[in-house]
Image (cartoon, rainbow, N blue to C red; front, side, top):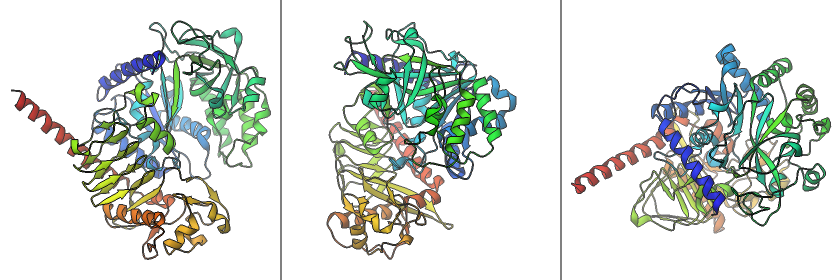
Length: 597
């Protein structure tokens, strides 16, 4: 994997070991965060987060003496991660009063619906399991581990991060990341120009930056949000890496030895307490936001001496343009203009995103750099008999597999029970499911079960898609639904096979957005395994062009599954698997001791 990657692996292992020692332990004052805040999209998601946090604390999987606060976005229109940041500041003040002015806060944006990785939708992206640790780490533990060195070198303030990315980095023995300057301070990673077009890009002040050393403090002249290559060049954001002894060959950019050009892209940013206070006052004055604002695009673009207000009117990157957006951006620009944007350049660092099914499968099962640097395992905290073993290119996470089952290469199975007569094809995802019948799950299949409660009793629904299906895509007219593809087949063809009529009633969005996310096509069943069987029958009918009548079932859309989800029941199923694995581990240990004596 190369020298740089090996250095990141070594530093990452050190951080993971330090965090492991603090799980369930009380840290010394100043050693860890005063508060960890998780944002949630609504009250229901916040409830799911609180339940999972309580379970982690009961099992001593998180450090004690850290306050964990879940903050739901206010009801009404979506406010984006910028709005969530402002709202979280208000929650901090309401919860802790003036005390929060002395706190170091980690704020993790976790409130998305995860339409591109729906296995994370019901319980939250920040609770996505990783094939790592005993018991397994979720993204929350990984975030705490990767930032474990930060709180000790941070003045009171807020570090803002997202729940579906991972930053791995290596620095020299004497180098330390310090957040102690007024204004904003952001981490910067060397990236190819193509990566820059989908991220924020820093235009670094050349007088404060040399491109040498593993870690360098500089100042940012201007911040560009998702710029095209021409804009990067015109603004002087493109750098030529000259390399140095600690890193790889001259001219290397990121990890590509061939590339000589790179840009420095964003990930995590910190704001000192007085800046956070300024933003909180702004939020109180505005009252209700009424539009989506972006914590990166709308805060950071206002910073640095080269900032101009032009971006406030540019809505080309916005998925839904709200009428009040430009006015709010202009107010934020006026408020933040002249505030410093300090940059900590991490020359040996890599930014990884696992927010889509393809990224998730690649990083967890292929020979990826992330897999190497984090030490991800093919089988993590699972019962996996030798007779079920397959190629190394797979990822089994907190699951119980019976002898005889077959898991294809490049597939991920998490929080599931897989029977002996089950075969899973290649490149598939199976999540939260119980499969105890004879079945061949096709390759590139996405299967995820959800417990729901619409009346007094718990029922089950299993969503099934192709891993490449676009769940974010929506059309406004029924006549356009032929452009929606389910497992490579147009939706109207599927509906014919299932004896369903294409009508506005078929969609849970009341005709505003017709798509796979809102299509009521998944049967509600009384048991978990039956729901898996019925959804696989649906898929089988599409693949073999054979009829499978769905009209007799009560049907839900993914959107409705999340509305009616029963978090308690889903966690109960996971808990049963967890305790069964723990018992098996204890038995193996006692057998080993008996055989060893």
